[in-house]
Amino acid sequence: MRFSLCMIVKNEAAVLRDCLDSLKGLMDEIIIVDTGSVDDTRAIAAEYTPHVYDYDWQDDFAAARNFAFSKATGDYIYSADADEVLDAENQDRLRTLKAALLPEVEIVQMIYVTQQPHHPTENFARDLRPKLFKRLREFTWIEPIHETVNLNPVVFDSDIEIQHRPQGDHSGRDFGVFERIIGEKGMLSDRLLGMYLRELYKAGTKAALENAAGFLEEALTAAAERGDALQCRRVIAVLIKYYRLSGQTADILRLSLREEVTVPSAEVCLELGYFFAENTAHAEASAWFYRAAFACESELDVASSGVSALAALAESCRLLGRAQEAAEYARMAKEWEAPAIV
Image (tube, rainbow, N blue to C red):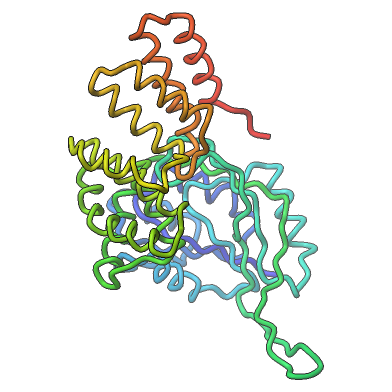
């Protein structure tokens, strides 16, 4: 059983060597596609493999990954980002998997562990993600009558844990891709819209939010027309953040009175808290921060009902002279900031 490692990289000199050192003994082939690095990324890659390719970036991650996969010759393709590392225990788990992997398995999922709750594109989480893919898929006929081809892949959920160690904010590049898709198609799939909203809320600058505002107002109308209250609340949270940063109070009021936010998300409560805090209405701010922390669910950013809300609540209490409460909420925020991985 041969494994091909396929990666797309750009300016990853700070982390690439750690990633490759953790994988080189497990891979039979390493393929690295560079999309325009100006640091030592390409030179580091060349230390590990002769299969280093230049690729003209087209604002399309799928196209770049497809190009990398097209160069693979192994039975399975392991897809990795440069800021991922396998520790010794999980290297052993992958080695065991490689020795015992049944040929009918087409996708292996692994546990992705991200330890930075403030990272712009990831929530603090442990979640299963597809990481190992059978390079050539074999199709078989099923059903004894009205037979059809089985299109459902055989997926194996492994116990292998990948440590994700994000080093910086790549959201600017992501926003460019989202904006290109919107410009070309006028829309995003539900999956991409959810990811766009999360990145905008967690990492969107005022300029990025301004670029997105018109599209988001249209997305809000569309979500309301199909009765999707969850999507409405997510869009509203991002728009309120933009209108707060832009000082557009009337739009904040318009959105916060919509039917979909009768039961608001933690993000909406947090943004309203920030609005009142910026206008020195600290009693009102503390009430909204309390709702975000203890009465609402996060829908885009887990920190909105955790460390962000608790830290803001502590500051509001301090400004209101409620020192004991402020100290308690500050303690809770600090504990939330570094939760245990279980």
